[in-house]
Length: 322
Image (cartoon, rainbow, N blue to C red):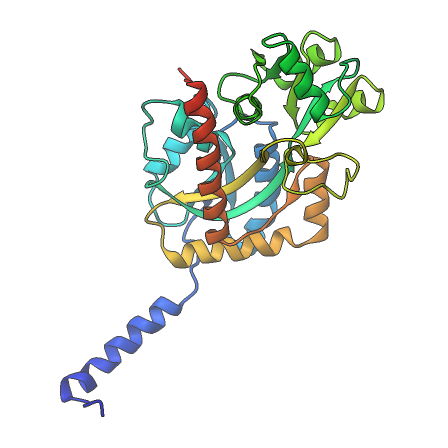
């Protein structure tokens, strides 16, 4: 039998007050800020502005989108790492947030210790696309061509350490082929040279090359996803022809590491409810994004998987972002 002492009885009011305070839902005390580590007009910026427009109604406070582009997302990430951990400042993180952890030798923050996952927002599948006249009709044919002509085939990217770059290096590593990386400054330039036949392949989302696919000047060979996609059921996965390789563009919200659990829970609940609305999902789809609400724990698992995969590729290729 548990003995109830006079001291326990006297302490009960304080314990009840503390428990009630802990159970109170978090509410912002001033304007909220979503830091986007890119300039205006990017996918992450468009999604952040869409969220901000509707979240301010849910929070009852303005939600400001603050563009802090530069240094492969590290300027914006450093801004949030230094922010007060009170739930008022979050980072809209994309895949380079993970890639820089391995490709940049001296970051101004610890990417794992300085942040905590809040909510995954959206994803977009990445395809392996080739120029329309390349004599390879599937991934097996492409790999056979690469093995027959080592170092001759080229793949484009939007720059050193970009998602298309590290995906191409992981393809080299896991398929055991020798292909040459050609970095471009933008996706437009990379796509134009793919169409013109100056490069042979690229890892890309569908939207930038959709018109060329319809015109027969670009061909989708595979999607870098675990399963075939409902919107492209005839496009096989890379894993059907070689060791599995998953590449996906994603954006998600991160907070400074010591942000209270109640603030993280409130943000996740509001974002998840918003992403469940068909009108919001439709507007994201226009950006070639699929709403993908997940718990903070599920988002943390995704980040861990990203770190394992891209760390492997970056170390093997000795990629360095200066």
